[in-house]
Every structure is written in C-alpha cells, then in structure tokens.
Image 1 (tube, rainbow, N blue to C red):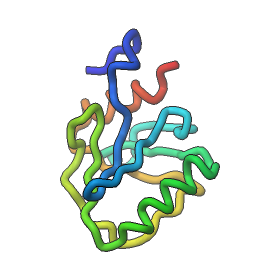
Image 2 (cartoon, helix red, strand yellow):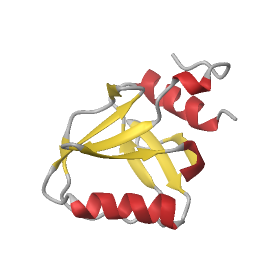
Image 3 (cartoon, rainbow, N blue to C red):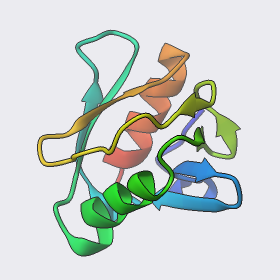
Image 4 (tube, helix red, strand yellow):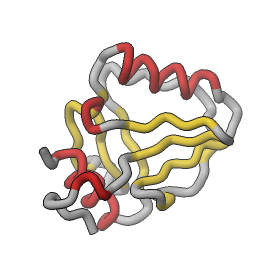
Length: 112
C-alpha cells in the first residue's frame, strides 16, 4: 500500500513495450481520479513536450505491439495491443484490474 510519508520508495506508472518504456512522472499528471467506468482511473496529462507529446509519440511508435502497464514494478493490468494512437488533450481512462491498486495509484500521484 502507498504511504504518503515515503513517496520516493514507490515507482510511478510505467508503460512498456519490449525494452522501451515511458514513465508517467508525477509532474506530468495534472489530474487523477477514479474512472466513472468503475474499473480504473481517469488521468489528465500535462500538455507539454515532455509529458503529453512524448507519451503520445511513444504510443504511436508502437502501434500493433503489446503494451504492459505497471505501478511500483507490478503489472496493473494484462498486456494489451496498441491498436490506435492516443490523444491526451482531454485525458484518458486507464484500466486497473484491482480497485485497491487504483486507489494506491491515485494516492501516489496526489501526494506532494
């Protein structure tokens, strides 16, 4: 479980395809909440070159490949095929298999 007293011991969300990865740093998340779909989180990514544009580019470069998503070095969902580019201008839904894990992710990104 996430502890706000020790935020540096937790690894952020990492999106990985093969040996390449994009790490979603705290500074790149402008808003996060439980998804209204009920099975994950809603993320809004800072609209900058280092954040949203870099994330969009990473996804676009790996169309047709399997994407793994982890938090704190543990898979948060099954690997999934990247079928289309992602546009982050209004946020996106990230499926998370377990509600408790979704809450830990939210706590991590909301902690100072």
